[in-house]
Each structure stands twice: as structure tokens, then as C-alpha cells.
Image 1: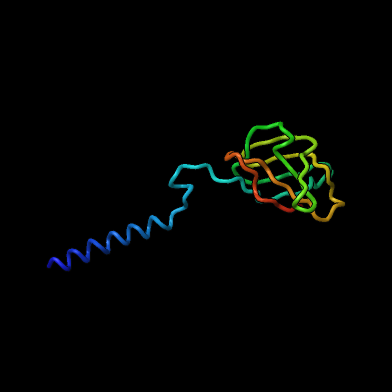
Image 2: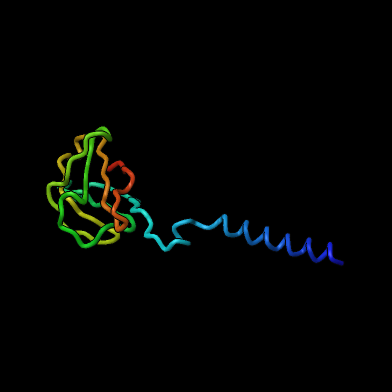
Length: 122
């Protein structure tokens, strides 16, 4: 009887540990998730600014340093102007237009870090 009870207790403990290991670490600690860009495109009507959609962006902000852009992923330049900003969307004028084939953007997040680079499309 003791072996059965001991085995049951060990099985329950292992099950609980396995369940804890599968959880997202940021969810347990209460940390703010990293900013994530889900789409970045030039304004379809004018192509004069970029519309960036995502999650956990710093909001509201008029700082040009909150949106950075690059052609090669190494040299990053700030936006020329922030048109509008929110936790899930930014509109910004950037130094590179749709005539450039590989334009990448990053947005500053609520967690104090930039998002991963995302390629802007037309």
C-alpha cells in the first residue's frame, strides 16, 4: 500500500512540474512581452508613410527614435516624423520609400526594447 501511495505522490509531483515547464516565462513573472510587428506597409494611397501594425508598442509617442529603419540590418536611421502612434499601430515617415527593395523597420516596445526587424512591403 505504501508503494502505491508513494508512486501516486511522485506521479502527481512530476505532472505538476511538467505543467509548469510548459508555461511562457514572461507569463509567470508578469513581465511585459516584447514588441512584435505583424505587418508593415507603405500607405497604399500615397506611399508617403509607413503603417506598422503589431502588439506592445510604446504608446503614445511622438519621438522619432521610436521607429528605426534600415536597408541592410546594420545601419539604423530614425524616422523622419511620427504621424500617429498607439500600442498596436504606428504611422511614420521614414527615410526610405517604396523604390527601395529591402526596407526594414523596428518599433520601440513597452518593455523598453526594440521589436525584431520586419520587412516593409508595398
